[in-house]
Image (cartoon, rainbow, N blue to C red; front, side):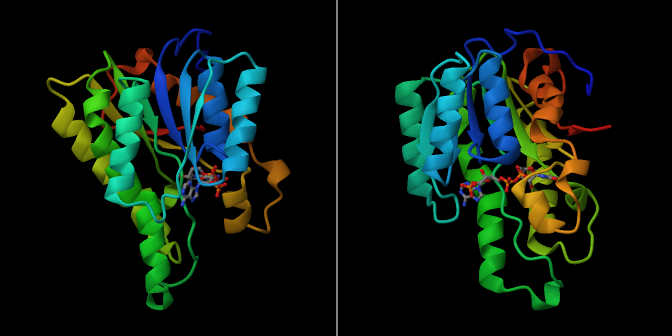
Length: 247
Ligand SMILES: NC(=O)c1ccc[n+]([C@@H]2O[C@H](COP(=O)([O-])OP(=O)(O)OC[C@H]3O[C@@H](n4cnc5c(N)ncnc54)[C@H](OP(=O)(O)O)[C@@H]3O)[C@@H](O)[C@H]2O)c1
């Protein structure tokens, strides 16, 4: 999969929602999906960043994307309902979701973790993917082959000291992905998997590992093969799996 070479038209006419599309891996994925033919709904917190991604997609002659500004931290059930209504009205279906937005939170012992901060990390990393997925199931069911991708991390796969709410949110996200994969395997066109990006030079990585030179790490654009593979129909029989984006 690391060497997967996606055909240019892999995602032609597909409609894909990418969360955290304004920066880092989400930005690279939004651009890469658009480059392969998809219409992207760019969901994120900072409008200026989303507008830059919008402009880059247009400049590269990708299908016209849509911007959906949303701060997942404060979003309520009504906000996700409104999003579903808009998506239904504008697009009528969804062929994919990349749950990518995340908060790193604090790296500290659980004994000292601030409870309010804990709630924010869980809201962005776990509750938001749950609510988005739940609200969008009816739209995903209208696709002939829909792919929902969660984003995990090594520290979600194996618990590690000081990773607190972030690590737990990732482990729970993978569990949610597996439950959905199991529940929807029969009689729906939707599959659910997680991607573990591995270490990538982004703002989040720099915050977590300030001592590591980002030039020694792959860039987000370098790990897109797995993201393309899992979103395209060539992976239609893969369901309930955790896939590494790097060897
Ligand atoms: N980089 C790595 O080495 C690495 C390793 C393992 C897993 N991951 C995972 O990969 C994914 C992408 O990470 P990244 O490294 O690209 O991080 P990043 O550069 O920090 O980007 C995170 C994105 O999430 C958005 N976001 C954060 N809080 C949000 C909120 N409240 N509402 C809406 N959007 C919000 C950010 O928007 P703003 O920019 O507007 O704040 C940004 O676009 C995450 O799920 C992360 O856990 C990354």
